[in-house]
Length: 139
Image 1: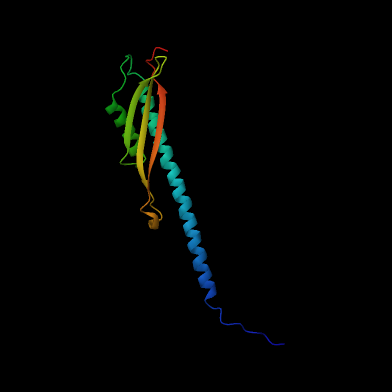
Image 2: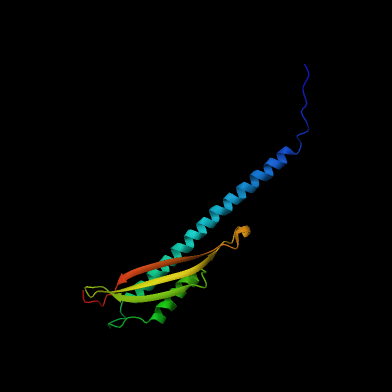
């Protein structure tokens, strides 16, 4: 019995391993970037909620609400703890038809990919917002 030899296949394992590892690393980096994206989005939402909570609660034993600059400072402190820079904080108030006052805090920040440099040109603006009824509202 004779064994048939097909051409040399010495390099096929290396080529297959290189392609497989490339796809594996792209997949893993994509999962890491998706997790980071969700984390930043959640931090922005929590920062907006923290700012709205501060905005609707009057200062101790008064009916005076915090100023916009105090709200922005509090939210920036929250964001700096999570290493998020260049965020914009926009507090606003409005009154509905029944006379109830609400405060909305919107926090926006640019998001850039850091793990996959081939997509470094992609930039998304993430936004977190919270709406709360003012505690000084008569209703």
